[in-house]
Amino acid sequence: MPVAIVIPARYESSRYPGKPLAVLKGATGREQSLIERSWRAACQVSGVDRVVIATDDARINTAAQGFGAEVVMTPESCANGTERCAAAIAEMDEEFEIVVNLQGDAPLTPHWFVEELVASLRDDAEAGMATPVLRCDGRALNGFLADRRAGRVGGTTAVFGAERQALYFSKEVIPYTGDTYDDREEATPVFHHVGVYAYRPDALAAYARWPSGPLEQLEGLEQLRFLEQGSRILCVEVEAHGRQFWELNNPEDVPRLEAMMREMGME
Image (tube, rainbow, N blue to C red; front, top):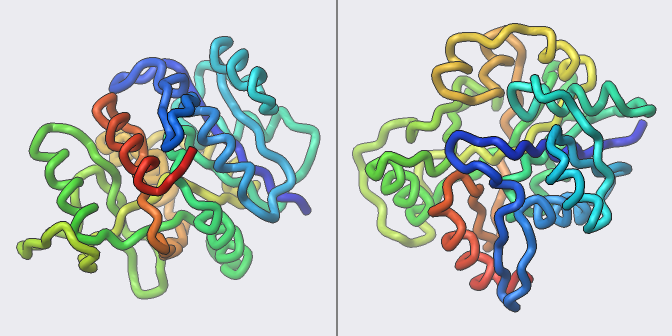
């Protein structure tokens, strides 16, 4: 059965209204919107049969069709990207083995993150979903801590058990460490949760039926609904292989992502 990537995108955002259409300039000076860069990243993933953008906004629909993407319109009532993915799959005339949610604010996601995610979910029959985690080096961890001191959310961190089952995700930097790390490629005990999910279709459909729990509401993290319902989430540790990774969460992240793209030579 085929694999689909769904890129959920909404225009309204409390932290960054209009974020999917924010323009990012690459190493060559080429300007592309955040949603186009995310779509192009999804198209680089091997073993994927269909890539769609799921939105409820006519402006995003128009922009996406303009660069050649397939768009599925979804209800405004979708509370988060996972609900939007579920709504998009329900509208599509095809059954899938695995559905990948590649969030539209993570255009630097390397293709191998998604490929390893799909392969790991196939190998773990007990997991309804899987998500990648990336061990922070000193530079990444210090960036997280600096954002929190400034009152910003720089990213999400994850903790998991011996069998790689997720224990918790937070916008705070967890686990706590009293050690300090300089801006070198020095391994730390903190794992950055990469904003990608792979679901089995039955788990995705169940998610849309479950109510939002208190932890999801407090943290604003959609994946916590799975944990609150006792569903297993598989954490897949991935390697950056020299690639920098960051999501666009705040307007202040635009120059940070552009600097990373210049450093990596990304158009």
